[in-house]
Length: 115
Image 1 (tube, rainbow, N blue to C red):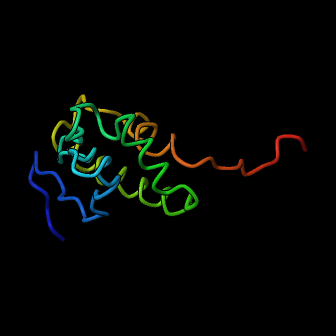
Image 2 (image 1 turned 135 degrees about the vertical axis):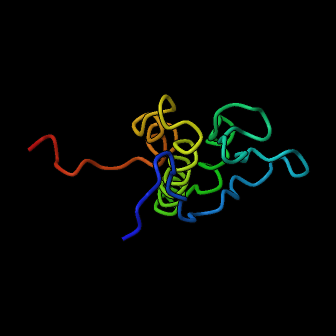
């Protein structure tokens, strides 16, 4: 069994590559994240910024499952990256979930609330 040295953090596994949304209009700087900071390359806001969210929703217009999978993978990657940068007072998992996943495709509740 490998004994971990104090202060040594695990290396994150490779998840999806953040290659969406595509640049719009073509030729402009894309709203993609700068890793490991997860800031938008185009506007400098926390990624996904408002423009990236709109572009992702338009790009995945009728492919909600694919968008949810993509966002969940990026949430996983961002959690690893941001924790490694600042494990003590960085964003919480809940904050990252809301930032990366919660705004995505609408999910139906598991239980029908009318029953």
